[in-house]
Image: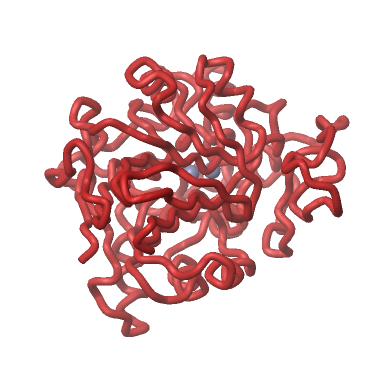
Length: 372
Ligand code: ZN
Ligand code: ZN
């Protein structure tokens, strides 16, 4: 690898994983928020950094180490990492999507790969963190490449009513897919994002963007009445370039249909002590889409990525009911654990506490889970 490639790779890998904060010195005054983005007066929420941008307000986020990215790179060169899985190690399933939409009382969730799901709830079609490109990278000639194709081919997608975005890392916010959705559906598709994404979307011709702060909610019209869409906290971080750090918020999401069916999309998150507040304020969930991969080495990844043990704890903190659907594994090589380990380890920790086996679902690419 020559120097230019190395620098590109480093930028891509760093931004993909959200580790640039550890790589680069924090310098200069970040853009100051001109006003409370929610339009309210009163004290600034604790996740709004007084110096501009956003921050995690919990002590669990505060385990940064100067030069940690370089220590990780150094150590992983000395380790023998498990190889990337061949495509046959990740067999795909045939999706069971309802066209053009599912009934208003149905709940169907299809895993496309990584953090991309098609959620059919309340009679509408939603995508989470839509990603159909080959690489999770700022460029399509370098950076992590897919182990296996998206579980739902682009031309098998039903029409999409709305998208939930968790944050701006390259494995979650994909420029190519955003442009593709705009070309196909124009401003028919409504984007729900955390704060400070409108400009990014506008520069790509996408106008139909609703930005929400943590705990803010809005509605999405459906055939049986409006669905509630709630932006919720998570413990993560944002960066797409070395000069854009913590300027855009990260979030998890709740979707609640008129019939009460509810889905939690966990986005990308480390375990943090704020989870129990979510069911207290929003209720429990029928389906919880939680990340279970990208956790090694722990000393470096723990603040930003939960492991299966922490995913179980998150599930319990979120009320301990409903079905956990595992995600954020088996698609791109981002970290050091064996890419095939997360589902096995998740099943082990789940069974060890005696929870009903079928309330843990780790879908294959393309597999559809239907709430019964
Ligand atoms: Zn991320
Ligand atoms: Zn991620």
